[in-house]
Length: 345
Image 1 (cartoon, rainbow, N blue to C red):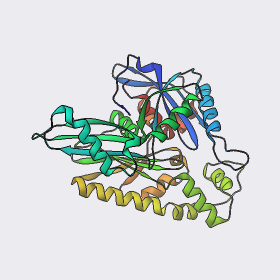
Image 2: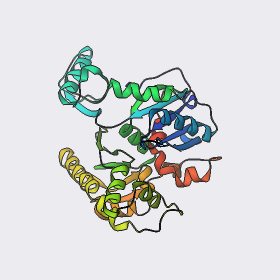
Image 3: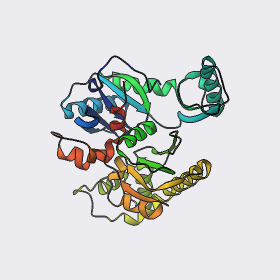
Image 4: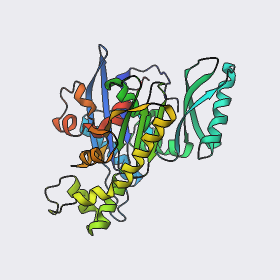
């Protein structure tokens, strides 16, 4: 995946392009005097297919084009990312090894811990520290099928993916630039999207812990629809605050539908704290498209073991010339794209 690769390009020549399963988000940044400024940003929903309601690859590529057009730019180069069960991010700790043997050791470790065929996968690694003669670091792996699919989605929209990242790493990359983690405490970011929720944690050792959870916006909407007897489209409109939606209170159903997600997040936070012998910071930063749903963050705040706060990365960045709806209202949905745009290329 080569997420630390250096190319002979200026940073502002590429955009962060987050191609999700429900929407496409794009961010372009400029760095001046050590601070980031947003020079362009856009968001476009992927239209469902008229027959089965699925969001096809053709419609996804169309959404990429609309997203770029809405931002008024003609980007040809992008940093993209992947997520889900065909992606794994793990740390490693080896005894002293010659530099030329590290790669083979990483591949052997990846083959043992990844839940997919590592022989047909892309693997990249980074040595983070070497203490007491040992070698510690992290690796990211993903199936070639998943990587190629994301590259092709961008290609069909006339965009070249020059670097492939992982959603969880992009989240932490963005947080590292704008967050304040206290020593002895682990920082946590929760990105709730359409098909997956990504929980990304970073502690004192600077090694990321990332888990993709298969309970996200689509799952919650379907649970509410089943409880209320309303069509998923109606539930989605109500949750988004659509004034034309039927006046129907789904607060109780939302609370029940989020129970499984909140339980998984709490269990993961406890597991990490016990494993790393660290306390989790007193708050978890919530972002992603579903984080914009009214009452959702408040609900998490009641259910999680730590305080849940809505995170908008644009709050600490210059957004001159950006539409107010993007930087003020849609910012929490743009965190992955922002982290991708921060990648050193």
